[in-house]
Image (cartoon, rainbow, N blue to C red; front, side):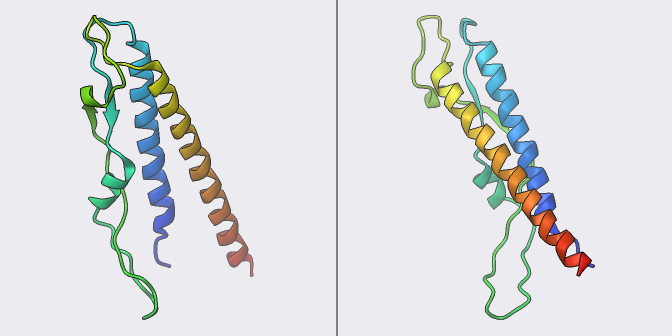
Length: 127
């Protein structure tokens, strides 16, 4: 049986989301540190575009493409912040809370998709 790459892709996205969550937590914990520059993680679609996983079409009518994430990289994002305080701190708590909500929604979607795919896979095996 061929490997199912959807589970691998979901696991890599979950690792990316975990990294994003850790970076957001670090930014929030340093919100009052003088001179601290807010950090961010590259968007998942950029990481997805750099991967080596190739999709295989089993029918001539299927679309072709590539996909699959690699590890996320954390970068300092001074220009991405909404404001910089007099102390040189570029963390915006409002912006970090918005990012935290996006990460939460990403985890929820990832979990729901894996659960649904697992259910379909188990139903096909029982048949």
